Amino acid sequence: MLRYVSWGLLSALTLLLLLLLLLLSPARAQNPFITSQFSADPSARVFNGRVYVYPSHDIPGGPGRGRADWFVMEDYHVFSSANLTDWTDHGVIITQNQVPWVQPDSYSMWAPDCVLRRGKYYFYFPTTPRDTTGGGGFRIGVAVADQPTGPFVPQPQPLAGVRGIDPNVFIDKDGQAYLYWSQGSIFGAKLKDNMLELAEPPRTLGELPTEGLKEGPFLFERRGTYYLTYPHVAHQTERLEYATSTSPLGPFRVRGVIMDESPTGCWTNHQSVLEFRNQWYLFYHHNDFSPEFDKNRSVRLDSLFFEPDGAIRKVTPTLRGVGQTAARQPIQLDRYSRLSSTDATIDFLDPANRFRGWKTVFTGPQGWVQYNAVSFGPARPRALTLRATAAAPGAAVQLRLDGPRGPVLARVAVPPGRGWQELSVPLTTTSPTGTHALFVAPAGPAPVEIDWVRFE
Ligand code: FUB
Image 1 (cartoon, rainbow, N blue to C red):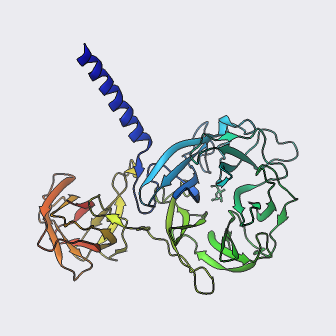
Image 2 (spheres, rainbow, N blue to C red):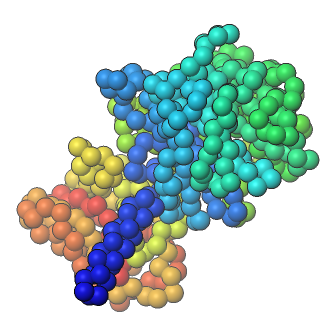
Image 3 (tube, rainbow, N blue to C red):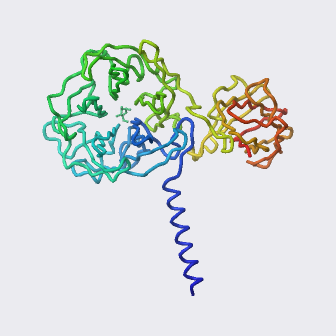
């Protein structure tokens, strides 16, 4: 009897553990860094030494679910990471049909923000109200929690005196909090101490470009300079720009471009800027999982640097993202640092389920891919496993350390016609420690596709 009870208990515990693991499943590193769903408009914050990202959550529209050709967003998730590499999805924190003042079928939960003030987390979000007396359009609501992951309790009414989207809250060194938002232009006002009311009438931050849409304000302070960052349509689509001031509400001086327009035409971009462990980062979005429809976006992050005079150095978007990748985890070469311009391409692993990620395809002998900052640690690996597929005989792959002339780590033959295979080979005598780049190229005449490589 006891044996049955223990088995029953054990199975229940195992199920619980599996459910927990599923809920807290880490996303993959590199860009985009959330790979289980669409995500946009990332507001990144450090709370208690951990990075939290509050993005919008794009979903595909359809009958009874918003407009198929527009942004469709019904809820918000929060994600967190201790190292900017492994991300945990903490699940839904606010849903459109659980906020009293929100039109429950509006699917317009746009770009949010969250700040910590005296032990409480204040989550600001823009969406469509039920009550449109006094004018239509977006209102901004607040929900309050004791933890960064919630549960968040929404206020019964949206913020009085505020109409628009893309709320951002900045708390200055003296404790004064400011709310910024947009509606064509960018507005700002002091918040009362309760974080739930404006302390003064809003003002337009008027020294910004007058032509072209501006939205998505995000303000931060560094060494006494207040940086107001914002997407702006200067030409065709949004690019990220910034202006600086010596005070949170200006006057601002336009300083330049942080990130150029998307090379592939994603119309929106939306940023936040964060310092974490003495390095600055730019969080932004692109439409990686949905190249043909730019209203299903994905959040990314890259390092950001300042010039000696305080100017922001323009950020070039990368797939590699930030940080080191552990050699003993699958290394996604398709999030490369460099890719040859001939005989190599990146494609979805499964076009029917793009969230399964990408593969590197070598179509000819000139192809190669380089992946930087792989961390081997102090213990030397002995073997390499490669997940690959080849259709024709003669396919093989060679891995080198550091670059095209670096020492060869392994050569792996890929047997044809067997679909995706995990192939393990011992490493050559050059088995590395420390941090290195990997350089991977075909070593045979036949085309070959690689999902990932991993060291053991
Ligand atoms: O995500 C919906 C809207 O697109 C945001 O509110 C804007 O900033 C733009 O990213």
